[in-house]
Length: 246
Image (cartoon, rainbow, N blue to C red; front, side, top):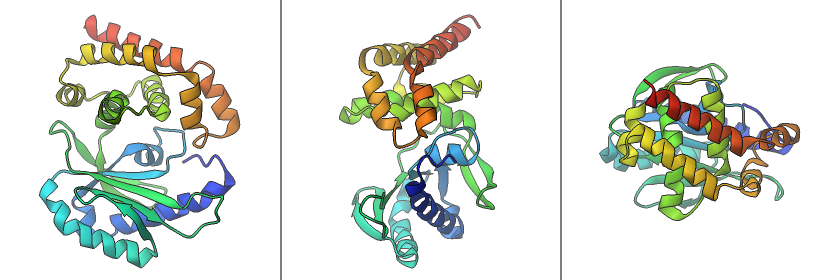
């Protein structure tokens, strides 16, 4: 995983401590499926810093039994719950750090997963640990969907979504189209057309810079932002053409 700033080293360390503790606890590891930017970075398909930990919980009813188990992990690691959701397993965990550094990890466990998601056993080489994780095609599909879903849910746009989409499509990674269709309610090509219009109308260079600035080294940030929006649009339009012509 890229570490854009020296002061982020402690956050990465604390995040990896928490991830290791979760995956080393069989009661948690057997129910939680790793996903998101940190997972993508650890498996080598994403080249940016990621600051959160995300999991799927396929059995939503298990969240009741998992909450105290997670609480014990937090206590053992010296992490303080700064805030949390009472309905879902979402935690903001504080660790000791200077005032000018990050000091909070967001841990989010989604219990409303698509039935079309697929999972696999994954060896996290950097941590010397195995886990269950979303397959690459499921990760790409969920990233395509969440790019508009954030806005539909609360009016927010995350610039990192479009950076990630470009990075995934440039690599030619497969897409679990069934996930996009199930989550969006659109046929795959129709959803991509919607996403293209959404980017054209809502994504600005300023928005991309604000979100990606903490996640990329300065040199990479400048290079990445130069043509990010048109490149994402071009890649999505290429994907649409391929699917229309097959």
